[in-house]
Length: 171
Image 1 (tube, helix red, strand yellow):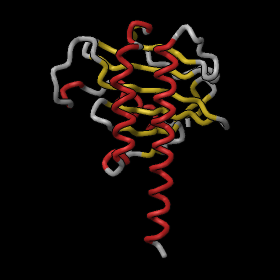
Image 2 (cartoon, one colour; image 1 turned 45 degrees about the vertical axis):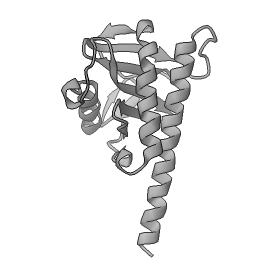
Image 3 (spheres, one colour; image 1 turned 45 degrees about the horizontal axis):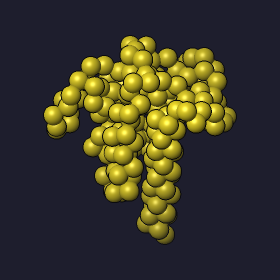
């Protein structure tokens, strides 16, 4: 594993994250305007030198990728609650766009800061979140933060349901 900043990362993780950040809008049906958000990629540092990247798209797809090469994908095909949460996050992220800066640099986060990337036809925009320290005068950030916590929660619920279904299937 190569080490970038303080997070050890695998080549698979870097490649998957890069693919998500460069995902083409052509994949989605719809008449997207130049600055309509169609995808959200969020780097979320976790305890124990774990870095997860959550990827959500306007169609409700939501996946998690981990710096050790692990992943949790495909749940959107089975769980409607996850599709709704991911879609809501991406749709509401349009309100955050004016608070972001256009970027072509996709550095990994430093410390506990969450990187939030918004994918649009006109490029990728970035902002950072310091969890637990989002000022009340930034309602767009607070709303997006709450919504991506809901997606994370739904992903965890789906994962638990899958584990339960797998354990019953093995008995």
